[in-house]
Length: 74
Image (cartoon, rainbow, N blue to C red; front, side, top):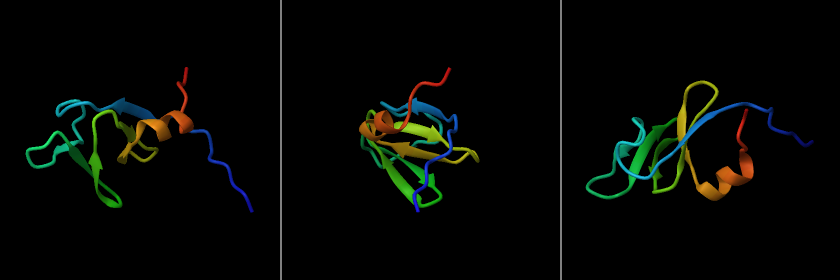
């Protein structure tokens, strides 16, 4: 069986530095950050998109995957 994702509008912010998104926490003294997700802590790198999902959860997404998966909603 094959399935297709239901079309859902999400909120996303591209992250470049600490302070760009309140959910991104400082990863020691590095330029990286991390987000506590349902799957555990995930590393956030410069340029990653921070997505807020359908039930308010947040998680990072690499720019290339974001571009293949999402388009601007009007």
